[in-house]
Length: 350
Image (tube, rainbow, N blue to C red):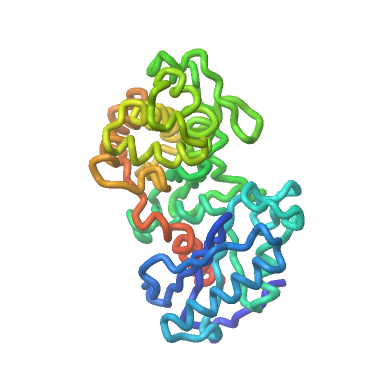
């Protein structure tokens, strides 16, 4: 059982911890809903060295965070923790381990319970996509209880989350919001972009046509860039190692490079087809796009949103005013969303 706080012993702070494959980001939320850390507060993650070292590193990072704002770890009532999945709703990583944590000891590891045991503070777990979705939803709608949003977070993979009428959809086993593995109608995508009609995009999960296989940094590296370089053989990226070339695609697309814009157009149209499915499933109030793919200047963001809309089949007249928003504070979204959700659980348990 987690350590319990009595209703008369609720302490003023909640921490949010976003553990990624390469970095740990920490934030602190006070009882009024104000974040005490306004910028990214992160340090490199040592997840490749296994759970024991990584958890101690999280504890040390949390201590640094409270010292940064002149507070004490004893003031923390609860912690929100998010990590890449797949993991159960209780924070037990898949038997194959997390997609971003390669050390074998992560397989079937109870990361929520392990951190809670070290800190003796209640820990609430979300996967990283759901945590970011909570932050995006909250910045747009605040505490309005009847609002629904769908978030797609485009990074190394494709994360995301659904907040339905104010509550994050984690699912019965914790795998809710695995939006990157929704299958895209690739035949329809091929009608929009004819050169893709015969191209099969393999996902890391082993299936063909997942959203992540079309809309992610991994998709650029493994599927899209090699395909388009067959047409643009003299392109400056053709001489680079694939991982380095993939990272440069976004910047070149923002500068107007024809091939790189074609790659991002594929991603946007695939995302539009995905959003169409979500509209017909949840009838949301907002669609939110986040992640490194769109952390760039506003003109490129608006171009990308326009391309997403071109990928969305015509909606019912009543649904055509559904907004598409860019995720604010993208680098801190996971930690902030995890903290908000942990505070919500804490308050509801009083």
